[in-house]
Amino acid sequence: MPHMNSDAKKTLLWRRVLARDAAADGKFVYAVRTTGIYCRPSCPSRRPRFESVEFYPAPAAAERAGFRPCKRCAPHQPDCRRTAVLAACRYIDEHCDKRLTLATLARRIGVSPFHLQRVFKSIVGVSPREYQETRRIARFKSGVSNGGTVSSATYDAGFGSSSRLYEKSAQLGMTPARYRNKGAGLAMAFTTFDSPLGKVLVAATERGVCSVGLGANASTLEAALRGEFSAAVVARDDRSLCDYARRIARYLAGGKPDLDLPLDIRATAFQRKVWNLLRAIPYGTTRSYSDIARRAGKPNAVRAVARAIATNPVALLIPCHRAIRKSGELAGYRWGVARKAALLARESALKP
Image (cartoon, rainbow, N blue to C red; front, side, top):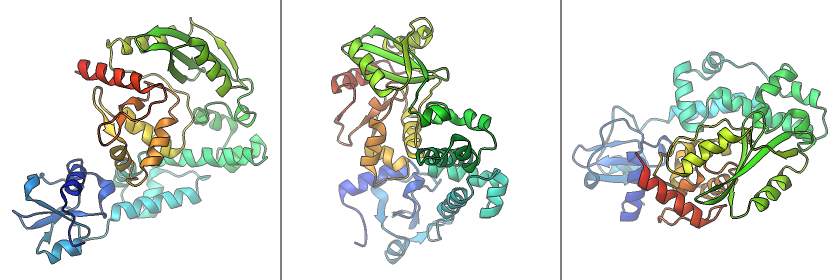
């Protein structure tokens, strides 16, 4: 098609333009009839009126219609940012066991360290260093899962010592040896309390909160926790978790919108990216699954985004209840759609 201007399509693309969505660059351009110029979706220029805009699948289509490229965002030139980030990811993947500084990586790719850091995080969702640590953890997990010793998997993954791996082991949700033995010996405390949404269970290791669940019955929540961490040592400890419980209870009562607690959870790079996007949704507002997918740089991976949201182990702390369908419907929620509706209604009424 020479242009992309059905009402529904225009509305969808316009949202991405308003968000200056870098993930949409290369997928379409927008043209402004009053200026005769077309731009990338992420162009930093002032946004025109919606009624003055047309959308085209490629620069050539916009130029055939008589528009000229914006000098500021150069939409007719290759997207060097995405090319640089992909090259950086490939290099990290191939050398994740090596020490890679930002300067070294930027020099290898041929861009400045500042530029690489900024565009890498905007497209991938994490910094180059965080991406490399994720790849190292993945290599370690693969090594021990395939029968290797913890020691050999540690060094093969590029960790110079076991202590270095232990510093990063919060990404595993447990120490390296315990990961290989399915959490055997991991000490985990939990507590439960009443809330306007029913019972709340909070569980934590010494590193931070690892599980938050909502339900009608405390014993059912406890049984689910013990089943999930069947090889760990799980014990009730109301006293040690009273601060976490108090802060979550205050949040549910509408007294404090910030729930910045230390976490001890496992995540793939994609899950972490989605969960970070969830945590960035302002209190009292929502985002659609498709919008989150676009912000994650995966506009066609709505189902994968939904799965990442559904696997969130810490309800409320990562606010997966703020993800809804594009139609505005609440869709599913691990802890019940009624609780999701109540949470959103309370936040909407109390948002600053």
